[in-house]
Length: 212
Image (cartoon, rainbow, N blue to C red; front, top):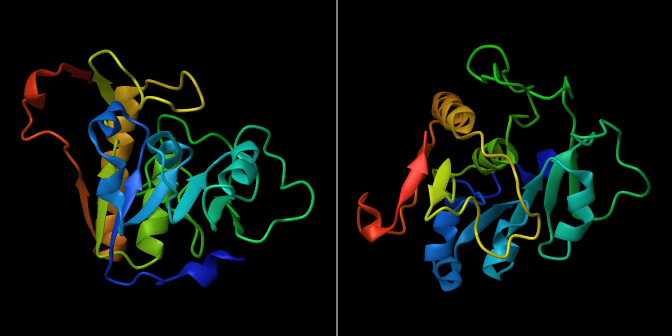
């Protein structure tokens, strides 16, 4: 399967894009019943449901994620080893070629220094950026980010049951890069990009939030 086969597959639909932030702990998995979902890495698995698509920078995750969904999108070269895919490419795995496989770094900005290659997807500091771009590539009218928290809730960095422990906590960096990615998608695709708050308002119902 190739990326072009996914172009405009979900024209004018609403697509939920899952990060791995702790706000996912306050959502019922049934909320996503009959919704169109792209999971960034193992976020949907942590909530206990199968997404429609998954996106990852890491080849080591791609085969595992194919157990959860029929389509997994990854980079042509692994973001850690920079090696191309080894062995037979499974059905359902989409490998996206890039101009540059060096780590994007703190200066990453799709609006200026790092515009995505035509007919490719953004290679940002987080796999979330590629998942966001994938949603726009498939024709979404609305992209709803879920768990793109850039902070801790009650001291937790990630959704519970996430199979990869630890993770980066570069909240200020991710906060800036998420905004850059949103602005680029609005400019290039005219898509609406929102974020889901699982609480009744920004007072967090008595829970504590610490971010940038």
